[in-house]
Amino acid sequence: MAENPTEMKTGLFDRLMRIDRRVIFVFISVALIVPLFFNVSQRIQVSPEVQMLNDAMSKVPDGALVLYAMDYDPPSAPELQPMAVAAFKVALAKKFKMVIIGLWPQGPQQANMAFETATHDPLFKDVKLTYGVDYVNLGFQSGNEAVIQKMGSDIPTTFPRDYAGTPVDQLPLMKGIKNLGNFDFMVNISAGYPGTREWVQFGADRFGLKMVSGSTAVQTTEMSPYVGKQLLGLMGGMRGAAEFEQVSGYPGRAIKFMVGQSVAHVIVIVFIVIGNIAYFATRKKRGA
Image (cartoon, rainbow, N blue to C red; front, side, top):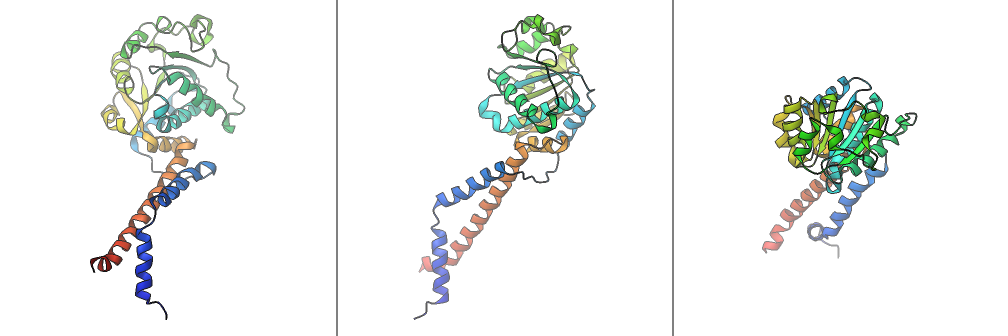
């Protein structure tokens, strides 16, 4: 005897209601991971804050002396590392002279990894850099905002040695760099305290440092009031990193992450719709 079509539908909806949550987790995992292995991208609308940041960095003269302060650690790297990589790519394209520091212990190490990623981009395969001449990494110095204040008057005594332990007076790039006033520009990538707020208060306000910032998504709302005043631009979270990659012309991991995130959102919405349809379709049966 043929099965009643209504009963077949009800049975299908019953099975949909009992989908193992691990199936959903598998779909989400695939959506997030697969885009990382393919050259995929999506068009992202660039926010005014990120556009300002890109415009500000574009106006910095080629060969300018730029301070890169990397104030974050590995747990914040998924959001902030793509920002650092893109910011270093801009530096390579414009031949900035770079001085790298960190107010977080792991900051200089994160900077080294981001810098290495940037230099391995095929776009910069012909760029030849000499450590100590074109860039230096002065490492970490404890003291939070006190370090910034001390750098405002005397950087060589604040960072007497670089990340590898070399005295700064043996680094050609550091000759003539006395304080924050010697820098043409600054890029700060920050996950919290000490970070952008302290650089704004003691670097920009007190010493007139021209700066832009990248911060975690949760920190962005706190930094937004400074945009257009002390901050010449701001990128927030993964979305901000993807926007900067797009507007700067150096697409990277952030855009791929955003593709995966978008697909994951679609999958979640689809399962929500399926769940609601199944719920209402079987409600009468469950009531009986």
